[in-house]
Length: 249
Image 1 (cartoon, rainbow, N blue to C red):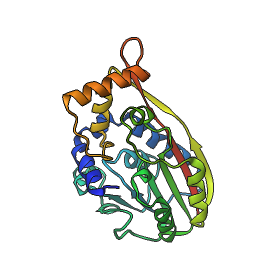
Image 2: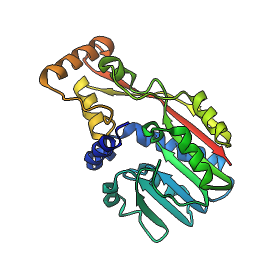
Image 3: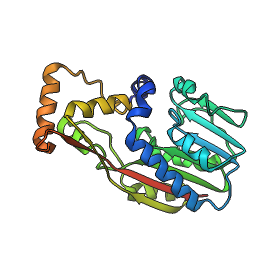
């Protein structure tokens, strides 16, 4: 996993992310709803891993009022987009969550649409356990094997996504008790394959390879995408496969 490339691509998408991240916004809302059904009391100390521009954070803070919330992201550049959220109680710490210092004694650790970018997700989950209080809660969303499968089929490149069962096993191996697992498929529709690429670029999720999109390569991509998935009007689908997991220590 090229962490520097991931950081660079996300940093470039900061200004456009909120406009283009339709699926991620739906996923963040769903995770907030699931947490509302699982948490029996208000969380006091919260850590959010991979807060990005605050898509989940804003929805969370409309429902919950933690005494303290630490926000983390690999891109220090996102801090400017969080200005409306930052207070003495809500603070931002940049860094790679797999290696950087993170606050402990947490009642709740949450990470929305981030785990798929980690080199060692099992080790990260184990680390989260060490940062949690007894009875603390870990809430994760990531993506399953069907995620962006149209793009993977056409380009031959993509992330190695874990199944929901494997993610459940990682939680168990880390000494956590899984209380909720859920998965779904969200399909977005675009007027052309070129718009699919624009969507991916503006949400920063193209940080897998350093592909150079020449005119010829773009034409080939569009033709193959339309051949495999195009509708009669030339529009095409793009599938997201979110997985939701909540576990307790």
